[in-house]
Image 1 (cartoon, rainbow, N blue to C red):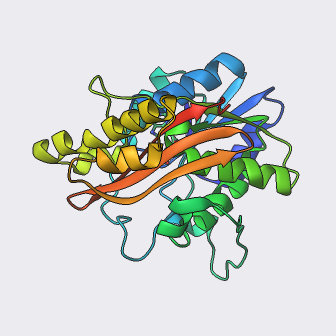
Image 2 (cartoon, rainbow, N blue to C red):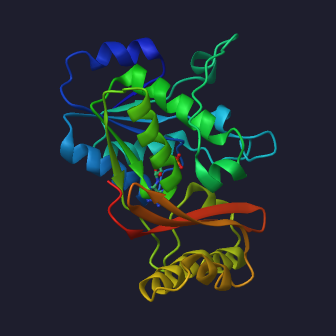
Length: 262
Ligand code: AMP
């Protein structure tokens, strides 16, 4: 595996590399990331993982400065998963002085409303990475379902020639969705956080019984403060999504109620 830090070297080394799969990440790898790397490894000749803690998707009051970073460990895990190129661009090259162009996908639901500017930063960095790497396929996690939906809209609306693959959420044995932000949780908070996946499962059960899944989630959060509980309907795919704070950590999760997010 090669670690590359400039756009020019990535472009050089990708010339003639067959079917290229890109996995955009912010690092602090866990099994959720590794599932995306393995999916890309199965389907593509060349697997590129980008590692960039994108300042444009953090609001001023969010956790950019304390976001977990461990490039050495990440490089080892990526290499073990069969990644060919780890792209670690600099913020200076991604957003040079005078940077002025943003991608704003409208109508993006409760997660977008809860984090103003967040999805603008996500859409912009992803389009930049798509232009830099020019992959045939890009891999994203169902864990960030609203992000996946937003990117599906962006590639449709802007005619980006790319297939998106959405990989199912990887969870710990007790059901908590793996997230780089779980590292912020104390032992007690880690236990409290379990209410989020459990409440979503209660929502799923309510939906099966034809009662209100959103009310069921709210009723089962066991004292966790929800930012929102939302039923998203994306062209027939129904996703029940929620965000909640556990101490100072904000966690998101979702379950698919109907259809297949792929
Ligand atoms: P991040 O590094 O948090 O920006 O995540 C990079 C990619 O990994 C995104 O497409 C996420 O949706 C995906 N991802 C994060 N956590 C999980 C998980 N538990 N299961 C599956 N994919 C995940």
